Image 1 (spheres, rainbow, N blue to C red):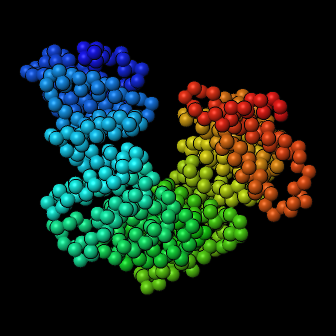
Image 2: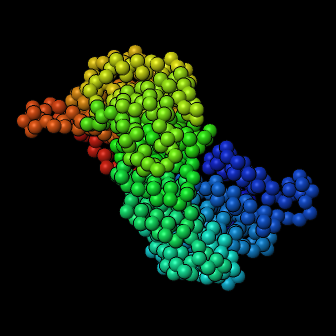
Image 3: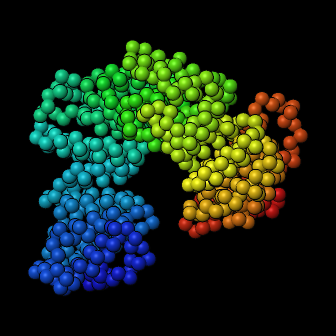
Length: 583
């Protein structure tokens, strides 16, 4: 059996179905397997001895990097191990770490736990910080949190006061792994236990215990942003300020991405951040602009946009920042906000700086003078024209050329994200202007946004599809059929607005014919449009929809077909074929 395994180690054809050799790690793995033939290595590099532990560990690390779900390369690791034993080479901690990493990457959690237990039971070896980071999720999933915390504690106590930098770096990795795997609560428990439970006066005694760093707090704040827990995020931010940990641009970005925070809360956070003398970077400013936009305060977003130009000077003046402002304005085109005029100088963001020199500096700003008093929709088109013409409205705000995302956001403003009245002519003009500009890709998001501008005008939307939108969508095949599918979903939304599931079903048939599978996303786009159409209608006006409901049943089946691929174990729609025949 050992000879068989050893032979397989050098048989490259065994791995050709598993590895395509396209990444640098895969190429390295091919070369490494070849060089493990001692005669090949000696001849090519004039080496005297056989491969040593460092050679095998390098190869095992490459195996770990190439492993992923559906690609199990553990047989290569096992073959390496047999060859090492034959040569009298003993595994070290790095050997185990590479094998554990390969098992975790391949979703072979039981195998990973087996290897971890072998390492922990060995009298000659001990777990290092990389081992602990690798065992976090296998131990959490197998109910061994206590043992995991004990290993962290042993590692902490072994290094505390002697090598605090290693502790700080290791716990950054531990917290990040837990947060990335949605174990935010457990990550907070770990953070509290090892960093925040120490008395504040002892915390600052450098050289005895490591202090929490900005990165630790940023990881946790990012985790709370991920799960949408703004209360715990703001509480942790207060602790961060209280113990004197510096705030940076990533801290600001994490705080500003929480949904549902009010303009007043954003302004309050901004004042706290500014009291710490934090110099905001372009990414932080973009997050503040986006937060004000999400909160419905487009005027404050405009103020922060101009302020950014003065603070960041030449940095961050690309389309990404201008698109952040257009996104904020687009969200001001929904519902009752459509007719509200921008009052930039009277915004919360502007008033917070009442004693700041910025107020005087920005008082005569040309950009503010240009859009102040406009509606969000008019301001969006004004900014688009500025970008088309590359106008320099302010000395520090040279406008970039618009890209596909720019046009997509203006289209979203025009449609009120699919809620406004039909604006077919203006939408078609916007689309044609984008195509005539050159360099603008008609991707699926842009086409979807354009079609939503047609409201419930299905005939106009279908006409535009035949002459303009459809051919543009079909021309973009770099992402498979993704762009075409997103464009079709825009038509589904129009059908929902017009309460026409019969046409939506015909579109689903057309999607199949074009090689695009209608999915539940397509069905949800129809339903979203229908919800907008039904808003404010009484129960009596909803009567007489019997035939409509039957077409919707058929559309539901057409967009939710059972996937017959063997690897797809989901059988929740196995009877759909029968249902379709009955309908």
